[in-house]
Image (cartoon, rainbow, N blue to C red; front, side, top):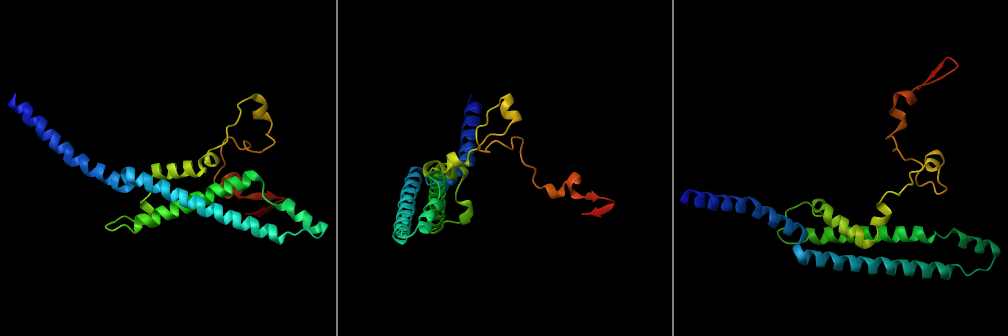
Length: 185
């Protein structure tokens, strides 16, 4: 009986010595609950910064575009579509947030990790989700019907269902071309 108690106590101490540093390292990396609140605060600051810059740019462009001729009226059609603006805004917010979190983590006293290793995949996923970037990063949902297999969609989103080859120039069937007894590479 005493042997089992001693074995259990030894096992508990060994597990604590092994897993406790891992738990602390994870909390230090993410910052625990305080780190999550810090990331949310940084994300809101980045969102305000990007929105302010977008509004300033739109106001400046509208001041420049006092329509005085039909040729200047055509320039209004060159503005990006709303979906393109939404994707661009989400990407700017995510980039500014990641840059700010890396900078703040690197400036903490006693931080020994490289700034590129500061952000975990979970934290990057959280930032992507909250910034609005995650829906644009996901692959499109393609229908699996006989017509979709035979014909392309009008949007072109699902044209390449089976994956792109990395590069066509390094495959044997496309590396060398033969034209009328002339060898080209």
